Image (tube, rainbow, N blue to C red):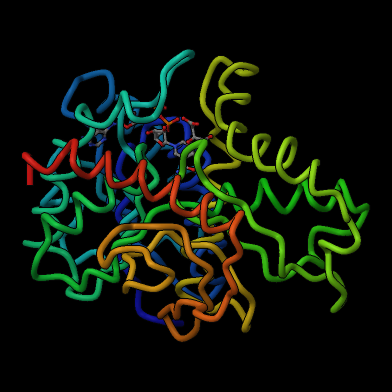
Length: 327
Ligand code: NAD
Ligand code: LMR
């Protein structure tokens, strides 16, 4: 058996937390041979801490063989102490009628504090996934607040968008989701994101040729994926939780254990590729291996794609300037 690793999860008593923690403890994120110590953070209010206690009691009651320890706290420096993985879920969620950028300033402070705490106490190679919205900009704030940690280890979740796009495409083309390769969702986790299947394949053949419907792409597919979060909120009265937790598991599992040469979408700090300014946390196609990721660099960008990629970039730049005074 391997030595246990420390996994910090913030917002641990929230809805995503409830769908996430049990799967991590069951080995679905880091493998069935990897014991974990869960370090869970919640806000200091009595109700949240009581709910966290309840979640920890349930984790205990599962008697997970891989759960090597648990910490529940309201102190980021306790939650992030020596953390190898940090899933930053805790944030204020969007309600009906709100756009993600309404949350920007409310959440900026949280991610400044947490970035600083990670910088101070986490493992020097901690892998950070930001789920809390606005995810890309929150990841940027945390990254900027943690100058002693590798910037490339701060990532934002676009995997839910990637998975949503996969399902829409599989249904349209009547093919199994598992057979679709080389899909990417560029940019911001917001309605401006650009899901792009121009180079996607099914059994080696072009998915775009199979679908062959530019109108469906522009007027149905792209808006459906972009607005899926809002559609879920409208339908459930609450934002997506189980699917978000599932995507977080997919993101971290592939980062830690590898994607077997396949493309996955991760929000990562740009290295300047595709005309995206360095440091902007942007959804890119990546391939993961041995606990690291490599940006896929050679995707051709046509006029339609350039416009879509620039639009989502412009929104990220606007969000970034909205929080610049805090950094
Ligand atoms: P929730 O309200 O059910 O849970 C959030 C939890 O975070 C609450 O228990 C709250 O007390 C806690 N929290 C708030 N501030 C905190 C802080 N500073 N430190 C620690 N904990 C804190 O919300 P949820 O449905 O679990 O969603 C969490 C976040 O994830 C939201 O921002 C939501 O918009 C976002 N989200 C992102 C994606 C994505 O694809 N990136 C998908 C779904 C949801
Ligand atoms: C989602 O995409 O489901 C989440 O980001 C929730 C939201 O605010 O849309």
